[in-house]
Amino acid sequence: KSHMINPILAVSFWPLCFDGFKRIVYHSRCTNTHNYEAKIMKCKGLCQYLCSLKRACWLLLLGSLFLVVGSFVLEYGFGAEPCRMCWWRRYTHWAILALSVIAVSGVISRYVLLYMMLLPVVISQAIAAWQTAGQIGLVELPAFCAGDGSAALSAGADLMASLQNYTAPPACEALGMTIFGLSLAMWNLIAMSAFLAFIGYVLSRVKKGKVK
Image (cartoon, rainbow, N blue to C red; front, side):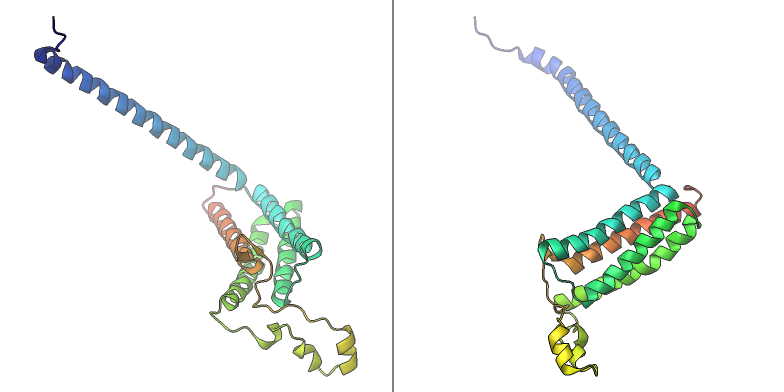
């Protein structure tokens, strides 16, 4: 006997097979959607947990402490000499760190201190953006950022003392040390943009009454 499939049986069973296939696909989609929604809810819960005022201040403290310590590690551990604009950015990092310590202690209103942090963050971001634009050739940086020591020699100080004691910092437009192809100024611009976005997000949630 030939083992041929009866075409009538095949046609009659086809709707059942197709319906079963649709059920499998639908169940798979529902499962994936449920898993995706569960992941979103976990992320939202984590954001809500981290974005309370006290925890936000702790995160800012850790972030600014990382920047302050990291700058000295790069300088003394890896020989990354800071330029004048690097020092300007360091001053803003110290200011953010100091405000974060005060905020964590709770001596002054954390809400007010978060607003105060916006000033050094924006200043550091502006300096980093200015230096980055100079490094990629979009703008010309000031003469005192050239790093050739001419500013110190023309300041009216004793010429011989300047020659003996003055060590010119590197030029601000020089890339210097790069990490994954980006200069330290570019990384600072990314970090300050993240700080600004995080502080803005926390303050917006405070205004809406979702964070205390």
